Amino acid sequence: MIPFTKAHGNGNDFVLFDAETCPESIRDPDFIQRVCNRHKGIGADGVLVISSSDKPDVDIVLDYYNADGSWETLCANGARCAVAFYGNREGIGGKVIVQTGAGSHEAVLLPGGQVQLQILTPRHITGMMEIYGFHGRHVDSGAPHFVIEVDELDEDLVARNGPPIRYHEAFQPRGVNVNFYQRIGPHALKVITYEKGVEAVMQSCASGGTAACFEAASSGSMTSPIKVVSPGGELMVAFDPEWKDATVTGPAVLLFDSRLPDDF
Image 1 (cartoon, rainbow, N blue to C red):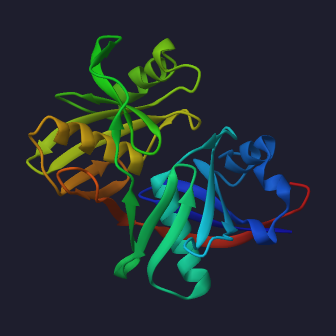
Image 2 (image 1 turned 120 degrees about the vertical axis):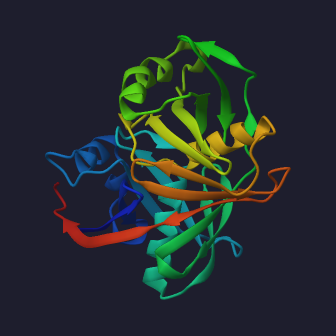
């Protein structure tokens, strides 16, 4: 039997495997697709594989796979859930260092099921671009995001326009996550993301929310901290003026533990 844990961060949900107790097949794209299938599998936006580290300054190594089986550099909500899993397994609180495909991140287990994750300094990949009538910029916040400001935002807008932008030739061959954001207060953004590899409008995307905050702050009109409101809940993004010290904080919920048969 293959043990797993189901977890979510603001509705962005994951199946989590401990590499030390699971077969190598947990990394196979076909297996991941079956696991993430919401009708015939467990159902999830992606799979998290946690491994032990041979580096003295790293606690865990995290590989994130989208629901289609593709590996991605960073899922910030997933990293926060992996840290919650590690803290629960080891019976610890406080600081945890997690190594991702985007680099090493410091995380802090906070009271009330909250996890704070350090975000490496975001950067603009492009200047302002017009894609299918929308103006935005390509931002790397650990994962690739195209960030667009709109006056009115709802899930239908994202569902209609996210897929064609995600596949636009400007972002090939890797593709891009598409984030629409609306200013809803002096320190608050509404953010809805269409995520590549999941191919769906997300309940929450922490790296996308951070990318939107970076874009809004780059215009000089928004300062730290910024509350990110998404369909699944809220995150808090805090940063210094140079974005050398940036964090995203929100809930990381471990739902249940179970097992899959070896031949799943």
